[in-house]
Image 1 (cartoon, helix red, strand yellow):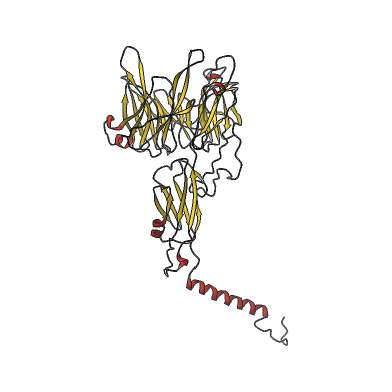
Image 2 (cartoon, helix red, strand yellow):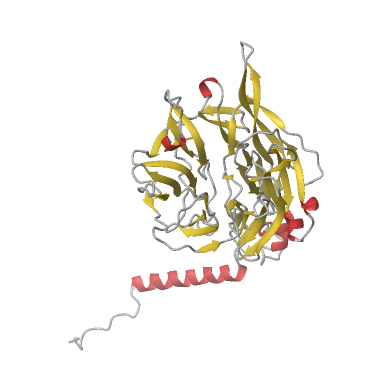
Length: 505
């Protein structure tokens, strides 16, 4: 109980007076700040492509500002050198710039922004003007891989950097490489190979490996995944080129065709048991996991993994089945009139498929997941390969014409199909544009550069030996492309022998 005779304590102790004084000072400072506004100069807080190497799938960057900006002043003063046409959109303090088409590979770019103003300051002072900003980025190098044919390079996987004119032999001399698929980051290549022996090499004896390329891609993070996605540490040193790692042996099963998913996380291999020929079908390897049989109910043939990396398009019976990459799962869809899927567009919305007609002709169809299917080309020859350009406006094809005569012969050629004209119902002669007539030979391979700038293809040639005999070799050709279908294109031979080229992403 309080003593009634004790003197009352003063209302404000020294500590109370100090705290109250500090509160008054802070209140005055806050009031001044609110009255005058934020007087700091606006600046670019983040550029999502700063010091990055972008690829064909990187089609948009984001600029994040420290303050809300006057949109018109930013859009009028934004410069990219060399120019990259695109479209702008805003979300608060973030500006997104979406490219109209893939940026050409092997090019350095600079982004600059100056004299832009913030949205709210209107006194015309220098503090309302954006701090000048300069950002730098580049596209990936133009790199492809191929199989060697001469001397010590025969059967080995070779990497060639066209931008830097640099060549590397990746695989050891004891392996004969049969096929290969590059990983999306270009740091590794998945390949099948057989041991070189005195016996003829056979596809049924191939095993599956990976090999490092020595390339390091400092790629930007996909938009919307900044918090949970990291491609790899940009400061991590790249693995030296030529490090081979076995993925799958052939002791119990023979390994045939294989495919690698677009995200690089899934491998599908067609396998046949060595003891039971009825035990055959696709197997799946996810990440660093063990191989797992899909065990789908119907036997299948040729296949491709869909661009979303979740499904498999596989020939089954009298059509194409779309299977989820899960064991014992039922098909997601079945396309009864198509026999082969040649390729998908990068976004997975469109596919090029072949129908085998009853009159022994073949039809090339464009199949869209929204608008259905449309026949765009019909031939008495063959439809060997097709690839979409990055804009999905052109389909580059390897086709053949049937040569009239008693002997069955086909004349191969490269062609570009104008998909806009084809979808409008234009006649084939107005949509199909032949590019290069090729020699009559089997197993020609073509590959479209990821930025759509050129085609690579191989061509077998006879060469004279030292004793006067002739031997077959193969040359690689580079065909620069143009959006002008009437332009005369001239292929260039590359100064080394090889076959089965494939561009890296």
